[in-house]
Amino acid sequence: MTTLRTEPTASRALPRRRRPTETAERTVISAADRNRPSVRVILTVIQVLILIALLIAGLGPLLWSFKSSVSTSQDIIGSPLRLWPHGVQWGNLPRAWNDVEIGSYLGNTAVLAIGSVIATLFVCTTGAYVLSVLRPRWGKVLSAAVLATLFMPGVVSLVPLYMTVLDLPVLHISLQNTFWAVWLPQSANAFNVVVIKRFFDSIPRELIEAAKIDGASTLRIFSSLILPLSRPILGVVALLTVVASWKDYLWPMLVLTDPQLQPISVALPAIAKNAPLNLQMSALFLTLLIPVVLFVIFQKQFLRGVGMAGGIKE
Image 1 (cartoon, rainbow, N blue to C red):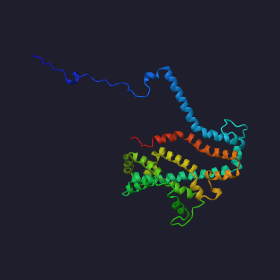
Image 2 (tube, helix red, strand yellow):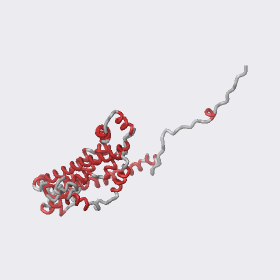
Image 3 (tube, rainbow, N blue to C red):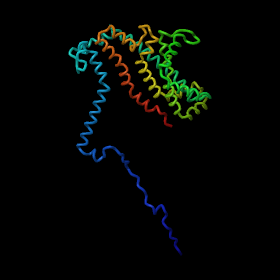
Image 4 (cartoon, helix red, strand yellow):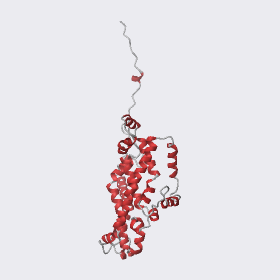
């Protein structure tokens, strides 16, 4: 009997390539140099200096305003850069709250911020839902119009918007000296509409189609599917709206001429005319403290929402 001899196949003849276990990254300093003690000490010193510079740039203004809020007017004028004042006056903060009536102005600011958040989320989410999920025939034209408003300076629409507030079309009523004059213009924010629309675009269409097959209405899909999935980006938009409303000055000054309705940003210049300098700094510190505390409390949700702003992974 003859035996058949098989020749080795090409796969056996060719050597197998080995995959590298670690990928080498090119950096300014090589790995060998990093292991040297002198290089590690220099890198540590540089990192510490950068950290100190960031802390001074970030916390410096807040700490200086706190130091000035518990100082005397003479210390603020005579030695503004002193690390600690000569005479600490802890009573400046209660006096600024009670005598200067910072509490009422902060209350007006909180009402304006909360109303702006509610109005912004309602208008921007419904607008983004129409453009992203419902997708009408004229949706592309409307999207282009919304994007076009981003390139318009805000000062261009200031006068027409003010005239609209003085004489609201159709109803022919004036919204001046009402919180609606601040809430409604801030709600129509093109940037927020674009950001929320992009997040809605990333939601898998299969989920929406499955909800339609199950018999869910348009309103039910919006309230029970889209909004729960969009909580991260809605939290980011809400926090940005609060900060923008808290520091807004020009528009509230124009439409809220009644001092009893003015926010703290408008009231601070008026306070500076009558109150001493140390009480002014106390009022300024209380004004800065609230947004900082809000960000510290909700920083995890904010950073998580920013990270998920690109969309939802299928």
